[in-house]
Image 1 (cartoon, one colour):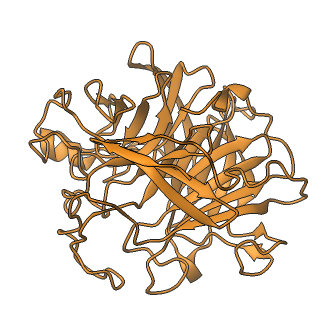
Image 2 (spheres, rainbow, N blue to C red):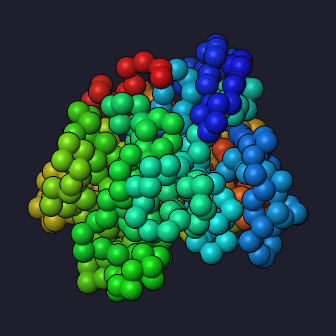
Length: 400
């Protein structure tokens, strides 16, 4: 296992020996989407020696006393494969809204799933900060540590330097960080779209729902473009239609190209979007149910070539996350596995026939597995019946 040294906000990995197959055995020959790996991080996992958090939480906390003594490792809303068995996973903005998340420090967690033991190791991470004052408005904290009251970070990709592009829902903004979590440039707004959180601060008019900004962020295989997917419908658009916006990383501007992803029903939501090649994406689509009320938790293939000329991304169902074969009973719950969480917000392609999916456990609120018991963060790998034929450039060349 690794030894971790904390240096400020950056955790340095000194040894890189893994104790489990992060890809759970590689491609498998299956005839239906099949569970090949299961791991779980307990709900009550905290960053040791951090700061108190949760002091603004109200309502049912499922038995957890607030405030917490430390920052929880929770709410996974985006993932980057480091190529060495570890993954950088983006924690959500905090506790569900801007008002109760001012003491939640935004952070990228470095995790290592061990499918042999069904566990997830927390091996480091970085807090997100703005030491060079790139954000032109007043932040919550004078020390420029970014909090869940400043941004609602929901999606992440790696940039060529090893840093991150992160999608925010409060702007919506694109945020560019170096590998130490430091903001490199001013938040990039999306022209013509304003969420209520920004409208309140600027005195402008919102045309998007609260926290309905960039839920998905995909990177083209060559790294030139980002594709930022809104979670909500912009006022004036057809209800249930979501804009996918192309951004040029070289110019730092949107190109003006825009695509449309149509939800299966207006009351559904997206959870994540990642690129497979220059034209195709994997997109999570879900309802708001959990446990017994969870029905639609799906992974779609979406193609921007629009072969039927209807003005929409072409959609093909890839995996029904409520109906995954588990013949080896890896999750210990029979031969059919379900992922009945309110928010399923992470997908990553591991190889041509294997994907991993993670939930956002909304700690301490969501109770999808067991009523009145706060959900763990679960991490599953799924073998697909046929190859995705991905562009090989989407895979990490080496660990970082």
